[in-house]
Length: 417
Image (tube, rainbow, N blue to C red; front, top):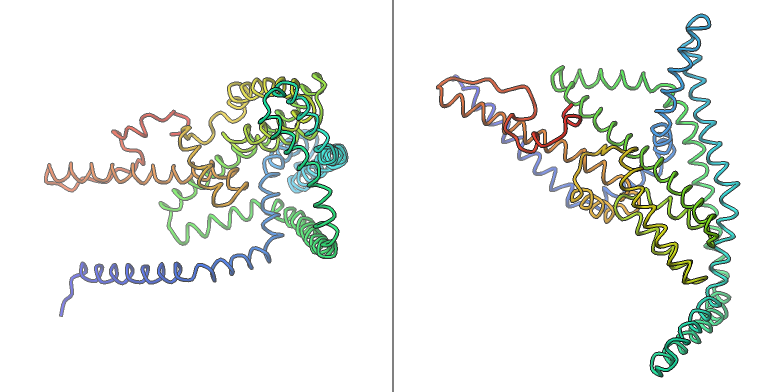
């Protein structure tokens, strides 16, 4: 009996659809077990994950140093590519260690002192603010009684909390501290092992790239592997440009904030500058997340300085958003303001602070993949309709964006390229 090949393809398609449906049901019904497996694997592979992150951050520095060293060696003698690669990795790691050491030695002690002084001075500052408010609302008995009762309860609640909660639970806290020390030691061990792993990753990055290309060509063929590699290059461009740009931009904003606060002689300049710089990494919400608690901290010392600082931060963020940020980032994601806000809310709710940082480039990649799939589908449908009208089988165009796709036509030439 001769069986038509179309029925064989249909049978395999139905079998694949049923198998994928069963697999999806299995995964959805056992999310807790799968999450536990990934959590265990993440704990085991933590040094390699940390090493991969370190290697990815240091990769542009290594590439730049390696190119300069290769050029130097070729001008002054024989080419020494291996020596240039090793020296570039060593110099990049030394630069990273120097930056971290400077931050720990110069910034961390002052930062700790600022936090301790803020914690110890809160009750006195609250009483000062209450007395300042009483000068203006003293004639209103209800408001003044509320301010007085709040100040007295706040001033007495801290000693009561120390006597009733802190001291009796000291043993429990000591046990928590010991477990915290163990966690810190484990984290430091993973960081050290990750730094060692990053050396191997950076040293073999070209070999790993070549092996990955061979696997792609073996599995998907030349046509699809080329498209997948193009998409990976776009992912690297978006993530690398966004993360490096945000780090540079936030560092500059933190330094400018410290310089401005030092000139204006405002309190807690180191603490607030670090807070402004770190939160500025988060797009859209970052400036507000850092500015609001900073204004409240200065408000505890001097309300007039808090007002001046609010104006200063507003000017600084306008400079960042309109001049510095576009110069550094140059719209590396290509997303509109709505999708930036959507990605921050979505991935921030899923993964917290890390999700708010990587949410924008990750959603930009997802958006680009969907856009290319839709454009390819539109082009295929147009080719099919043209072939139906002429009675011939029209070829499917190879170009990804459709000629009449308004979304692709509205995009800048840089993103198309």
